[in-house]
Picture 1 (cartoon, rainbow, N blue to C red):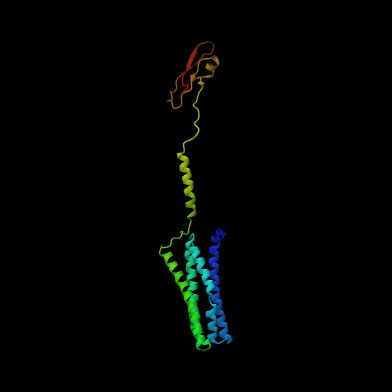
Picture 2 (spheres, rainbow, N blue to C red):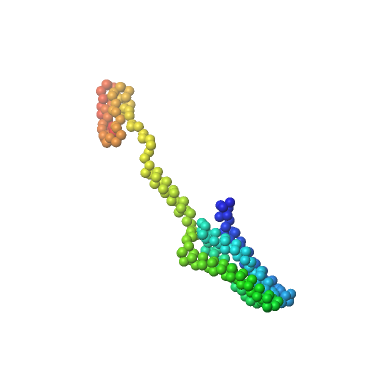
Length: 234
């Protein structure tokens, strides 16, 4: 299960950031439609924007996913995720503060205004803390204080390192089987072998070559042998 969470954390983070951005845009659209159609007073419409523009549970989800992408097996795209999250959460926080101030007059009575200020202040403080946290993480990434893997073709180099080590190990490995030394007898010509002449033993392994020399073969018509220049054996 942990492997699945690690594999899906990046798309989950982008999805949470996108949902937060869409909720901000929809809150602004509803505010514009409400004000243009006179469905609600301006202050009441602004109060609805402060309550619905960016929910606090969604901000907590974004912070958790960003933290998971940066500090647990950091992703190469962690910088982009943190920058997008910081921009979206900051925009939603500023919109919440402005809408909260514009919607104070919609509360009935002094007690309602006080309760609205207290409740809105807690919500704003938590969202401001989330925005500041994201900007601090982004500053740490850009300043090099938080290490993340560099994007790019780093995988081929990592794959080439084991292959190079295997090749070096194979080059230094001593063979476990040694071929036996060459043994046998050699004749200068087929006629000597057929006549039963003693042959020469094969040179030992590593022995120097003896060069070429004339070979004697039986002459045609008698039993004597004659030298044949240009032929020989090692």
